[in-house]
Structures are given as C-alpha cells and as structure tokens.
Length: 126
Image 1 (spheres, helix red, strand yellow):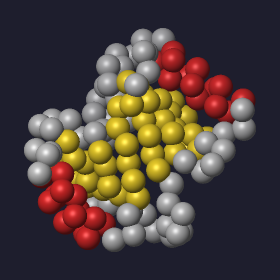
Image 2 (spheres, rainbow, N blue to C red):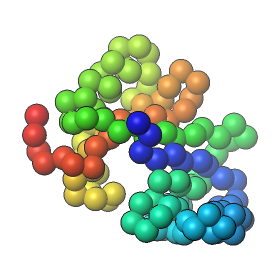
Image 3 (tube, one colour):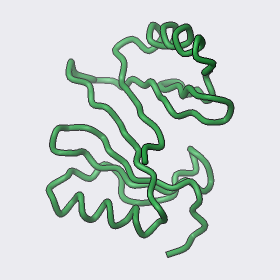
C-alpha cells in the first residue's frame, strides 16, 4: 500500500545526523541523497525521506506515496482527487529523475498534505 513517506525538516543537516544514528540501529542507511533531500532504507530501497524547502512554514506537510496497480490507476487517483477538490501538484507523468520507469501523480489533500499515487514499472502502456 505505502511505497514511501517523506517528512520535511527545518534543519536538514541536524535531521540527517539524528536519523543516521537512530535508523542505523535498525540497519537502515542513506540510500539516495540530493541537495535538499535524503532517502533511507535497506540496500537499494529508499522508503523514508527527509527534505527541506525554502519558505517552509511551522506546519510542515507530510508526503505519502501510495503504490498503484498500473498507470491507469495513477490517472484515476489523480482525476478522482481533483474532482473532490484536491489541488494538483503534478499531473501524471514519468519521473526520470527518480528512475526511468517511475510514473506518478501528486495532489495536495484537504489538510494540506502531499499525496501521490505511483508505480515503479511504467513501460509506456495506457
């Protein structure tokens, strides 16, 4: 059901030091790192992300990515969310910056959280 979770941090360097230590006790390490984000998990599986962005207010949104069955389900998720008043963050598309078969769509839910439907297996099908 849940593919990954992201939390936003006011001080990313401090958060990385904290999570390096506490997640290390569970056998998890940094798997991917970008200037404004870092993904932790077992080898090759960054499932828990820390990030920061400019202008972040005191109530920081969370990000939850739900695994979908296929690209059609990602599009249905997106269209249904919009029909219920969600704000579009990113229309369904391939995200090559994640990897070449990552297909996802992002919306902001009624409480301001960033939710996503995604697949790791996109091959250009319907």
